[in-house]
Image (cartoon, rainbow, N blue to C red):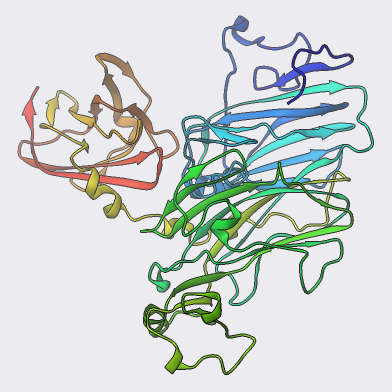
Length: 511
């Protein structure tokens, strides 16, 4: 920890935000006579917002931002770029969510370099030095606008950096699916002198493997000329992030597993090599194997289902009973293998990773970020299905009572009694199968306070917290007396996907 009690010379503090984009001294908060005139901005589809553009020598110390669009497909469609020292090529070009350890959705967590206090914002305290200039941008490559983007970049300016100060870089890649028997590259070979800082990884397992364990793969570090074999090798995927014998959810300063949904096959985890530095002088390449495991009986069933796999070893319960199948073609002897014996096998799944590293130059030799079509290919279809999430929530998140007719429409109430999710986003409303135009939702009563809104949409959902009754009025839709079906769609802050709740046989009554 730096000496926070020492005074510094020739260092100036700056913040960049929409209230002062250039971080200009004495020029912040000018709009609306200084009364929160420009706290946020909107980002149209295809638009790029400049978050920082500064000349001089300094260091970015903290980035904070928040927006409402936090589905995995949305976070993969927002591109974060960073340029150092006036270079036209990026040092960082990654999807927003993956950069902030949220490749499959954002949940509350904190580690040494990233955080999201309530699962609604993105924070990094990654030190990012620059010598002559720094530029950070966010591009909306989705089909919908971002109506509310709030951010600030906190940095300092100084006279110069010493020669040993490195530049921050990040690279993202996805393989969907991975290649059978070929290691997934977390970081393709990067050339230069630097330090591999860590990675945030997302895995969506293929259902064809019937929920079998996917994480036997070892991390490999190819350092300074290593070719066929690496210098450093791990022992397993969950071992790499500090746990063992499977993988649940947890977060710590240097390792964590933020999503571990065995039913859906979604896993998101990170490792930061801060107390255990990984240095390289010439080049660095980081990979992880695609290895699963199950018993022999299950393996036969999985293979009969058409899964692509290749057995590599059998474990009969001890090292003496461990068979390396790739070294001994005669090792596979059915008479020696019991149905309960454990088998490791190559498999194929959907893997993505953001790699963080420092380098002695402001650019790197790695390829550009994949287009949004590749980043999001099949991702929406792989999100947990509506019914599987909605069923256990019906008693806690529901539309009670009757539809009440109004002179120009109708009104109804929603209730949120879900103890495990403090915030719910009401996104879409259907009556008798027809979607209500968001602009027709004009009045909301929450905690006894009424407020008029301009409508809701997928990009601007209506948020309401736990233990809340929400009364919603809809204008411009007259309902005749009789029975009607109300269908409401929601998002929970800690569960990816859309929650759909349907209540039938509503009878309209006069208010």
